[in-house]
Image (cartoon, rainbow, N blue to C red):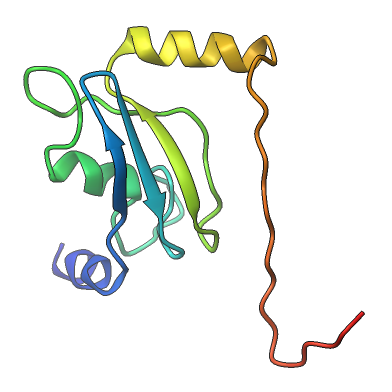
Length: 115
């Protein structure tokens, strides 16, 4: 779909922070949906884009599993698995609370006041 490609081109490209045979770590810019949705959004999801760039795992480089999501207006580091084994291992570590996740929120407003 031509409209879908044009709008995707207007979004900032994600930066690859780390990649090996098992994991892909990216800095997700704002505006990208982490995963495909049925909301009729006119642009690709981040997952579709990364796969189209050959950044996935497997023989066709199309295997990617997001291990968490960031909302569309948010930016930040995202971790994606390139193998089912990597996805399983990371999920297990998170479920057992062996990793601490931290989120930083920096709201931007035109009428910012000191508190």
